[in-house]
Length: 201
Image (cartoon, rainbow, N blue to C red; front, side):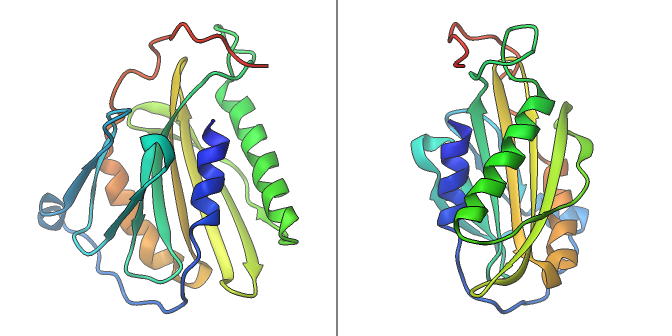
């Protein structure tokens, strides 16, 4: 299910190519930021006032935020962990999810004859949950050189995802603000509360 929402977010994220400067965020700035709360999964995050709140992702699983830099976005989403895997509940582990995620992204871009270059995965945490950051770069005729960071956590029942897409030349402008945003991120309902849904092979 998460793959469907990710594909929608990727396919609908084309834009233009100019870069306006972004100011670093102080604590006072963050207190004045807007708040997005997802009604379905309950996660929330503060985001800068001059970022545009985009349309909801299908089935209400998340939303896309648009920084004031063309061709960039930050998508936040939740998903169910219902695929079969090697966890204690027979569901996917974080490592299994990362392997599948990398394969699907590579295949998706390959269909557009776009080659992705993967960087080394990073272990991190997202609102107190173990998480991974997958990073890759690519180029195409419309968008130029791009970089994406995909951050996700995975509990026994649910996961959370954050997709950061930005022109490679503007990465240092956007990522510091995203880092401050993630300091405000709250995961919402319990990701480890196991549902009666049977994992799908």
